[in-house]
Each structure stands twice: as C-alpha cells, then as structure tokens.
Image (cartoon, rainbow, N blue to C red):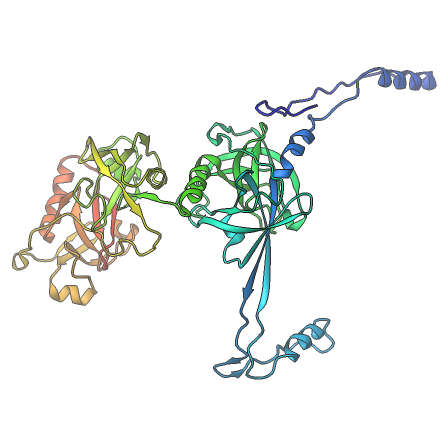
Length: 512
C-alpha cells in the first residue's frame, strides 16, 4: 500500500471467522475439513499498516542532543571544607566516592562538568534548515546538535525561543545534509478519537514510532498562561519532547511536550501543543527571534455563578476585570474594574483562559472591538493593544480602582455587616494594618469566625472598594448598599476588595 499525502491512511479491517462442527465419530476427516476450510478462506487481518506513512515521515524527525557546562560547588563551605560523604564500609559505591573526593584537596573548587540531555525535533523548512523543538529541550545549552536518522550530525544555532509556550526554533546548514521537511496541519479540525502518530527519541533510543488517538482537546495542565493542549494516548516518554504529533494525513497537528506519569514512563496520558497555537509563535520566532504579543493591561478573574447573579448576568461566562494597570492600553477608561469581557476581537470569551490566549494572538498596536457587560448592560468598546513585555513585575502594585472623593473621617463610626466589623481607613488604621497609601475604601477591622465573609477568606486588613459596582467611602455607605440590594431582591452582594498592597479581587457574599 502506498501512502498518498492528503488522504487518510488508517482503515479498519474485517475479520473472517469460520465455524465448523466436528463429529465424535469422524475426528480425522473433520480435522482435514477444518484445515481445508482455513486454507481456502482469506486470513484474518488487523488494522492497516502505517509503515508507509511512518517511512515518509521518519527522515523529517530528528534527535536533539545538548551539552551544558555546570560549575561545581566550592570545596569550602562557610564552616570549612566539604567533607566526604560517609558510606557503609564495603559499600559498592565506596570506589566512586573515593575517586571523586580523593582528587579534591581541601579548599579547592569542585571541577566543572558537562551535562548532556536528549530530546526530539522536526524539520519544517528544508531549504532554510529550520528545526522546531521544545524550549526546555535546549534551555541553557552551550552546544546544540541535531542528529538525523542516517547517523549524520549537524551543529545547530538558536534562532529564537518562547518560554510561555515552551517552543524553540533552531537552524542548521542545509548545504551539509539533505533535509526532509513536514508541514503543519489544521489542529482545530482534529476530533476526539482521531488516530495520531508520534515520532521521537524516547530515552535516547532514536526514531521511535507510536500510534494512538486524540484523547481530549483544550487541556489546561497549569504549565503556562496559554495552555490549550491536545491529549493523546500515543506512547510519549522522556526524550519525546519537541517531537511531532502527526495526523493520518502526515501533517503535524501538535508538538509533544509533557506527560503525566508517576514512574517517568508512558501511562497513556501525553500532551502536545496544538499546531494552531504553535505555528504563529514559530513564525514570529523566525521573523523576529522573539514573540511580540498583544497586551490589554488588566488583571482579571473568572465569572462565577454567584458573581454572574450579582451582575444580573444569566450565566457565568467571560472574564471579570479586577484591576487596570497604570499606563496600560486601557488606563484611559475604555475598560473599568467590574466590566465583564464576553468577546474579544470577534472571539467568544467563554472561559477565563480564553482571554489571555485571544489577546496574545492579536498583533501589537491593533485596534480591536471588545464586547463587555457593564452594570448589567452589554456594550462594545474599542481598545488599541500594547505590547506584552517578558517580565513578571509588569503592573505589580499598580491596580487602580475607580476614582474616589475624599472621605469625611469624622462622620463615620464602626459598623457590623455580613460578619465583618468595618471602620474608617485613616492614617492611624492604615499604619496599624500596614495598608499601602494608594489603597482607598472602607477598612475591614475584624471578621467573625464561620461567617459568610470568613468562608470567602476575607481577612482583617482587607479594604472594601465598591459594592455592586458603586464605590463606598464609609462603613455607613456599606450598610446602606447592602440594605438596598436586599430591597431589590438580590441574594448576593458583589464586593470589590483591595489587599493591603492594593491588589484587587471580587467576592460575592450571600445576604440571607
């Protein structure tokens, strides 16, 4: 059978079973009859072979080996020379400790050593010599070498890497080796139950082919902000990282990245970065050596059913804006704390994870339409995206609540409501609880145990910024807002809270 690109290769087989009745008085003739019947009918077959498919793809998959120089620890610690570990007399490991520590004199540093690792990759451009792999395969490597199925090797240089999606692009000299390339397919069309093939370098064994199915889609394994993995039961092991996951058309629909395993070996739960996410990242790495992602400049949180009910929404879909970054793209007031984003640039935001993916895939500087729910009414605002910088510090401590007027501190007294004792946030209480000067609102002085507030992990020192999207300045205003919500028939009160450092979050408290 010949593999034809563009046509599915896998097929089911039909097993033919012959049933023959045997007579106790004619055992020998019956035996001959059975044998004759078996030889006369077609032999049962299993699923169609994938040998032709694998043969056409193996040369495009490479093994990637890296080496890194690791400096040894100093021979001396703060308390003196590092002593040789104590091992039982006659231990089989004695000679190894003697050999290592016997060469080290007191006060000397341990020698540097080479650490090597193995992974997988695949060629996507034969003319340019472009190879794709995982970032964790080549991270911190001093030397990168690409090994081909015929045993030849080429040095590789790093074109670019992206830690957020764990992807890296390498380049080899195409003049030194004849390369075979594969293409990305449309991973969005992959269905649960479709057959897939993984090729890689498990445990350093070289080109290894395994077959399975798509077990699930859109998996979030908490490995990064853009998790959207394809799950497969095709055997993936250590060393498969960076290798391709093919569909039965011979196209790459995923890049094998992670497994769940208590033993380190495959238990049939592997994850691949979908081609629809990877292809755009890889193109940017080729063009710029880095990934330029759109940035909205907000902090957000999920819309729970309680929050949805408090906002007058019918379902808990979308992303709730919990903070606006000073100097960010929406600091001009186009988005406000308390808005719920339901659509971004035409893409529905059903889950809170949908928003960062949609924003990151949008070009920097693009003006996009954002559909929001603000105070129970749907509207569309236009936002021009900034650029997401690769720093964990961006926007820390810069969440900006809605503007508030100065408080009349002398006119307020402590109030108890929903299991919370509330007081005025003045200079004295700000100092007592260690609250940042930019935080404004009504101070929570104490939270009663087993109250609705305690169950939502509200703590003394938190500050109520607004209730039901209306700012509050005094404890009395908090009590009045709660009573008004009760009169309106509301079951829950939506509170925006600020931590001592100013980070905002929303919680809902039952009022019955």
